[in-house]
Image (cartoon, rainbow, N blue to C red; front, top):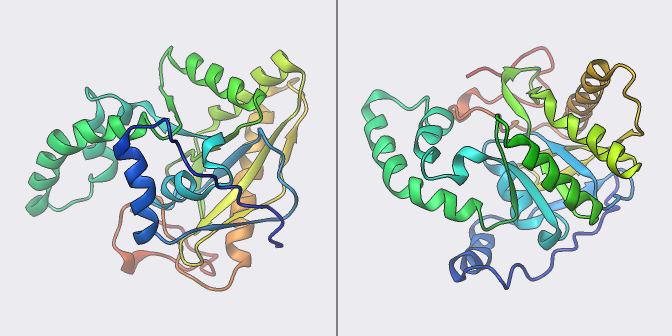
Length: 267
């Protein structure tokens, strides 16, 4: 895999709140820079689909993905709203905490996180994703950004592991391609992206090019998802041996190696 893509990171967000600009200055001191390696030149306005790798996927792409001013990350709408942020954090982030410490995370979720998370996620170029009628707005925003040649980043894993590298994907994010093609008559490129904290890299494989075939859309959706899941798996397993940072928030001693091809990550 060659380093053929350029990290076009520009000075970020001078129209953003002061605290957000401060974070973009201070976080790189503690969170080492990621670089991008891609198998071929990247087309602007595409969709990049990656493994979550705990918080490393969203954090690395927020700070270092190509041009940070022109990329938008799909983010669950629950963390963008004070009414739902705390409950979501307890269920998704801290569900496996012990009974001895869970009280602390409950207080944290309903105080600092409840207020801080919506402020952060609403100010770092995200697109909120909801599982109700508001999903139409998610798709509309995504298509507008793509038509402006801005990158879209999605981490669609859910809690069922596919193998030692990646979990299965929630499939319906693929539907944005069908809508985009119908509206603009332009192909949509889906790039598999392996987030690798060990080597501080974002590895991007060859894209699946959707060109409007929806004669059997359910099968097409599954085909694209499988291509992306398998593409991420192939990249991860091709690298030198390392521990794969999983989707789940579990003890490091339970993380699998990228060479554990006969094992499946579990909570």
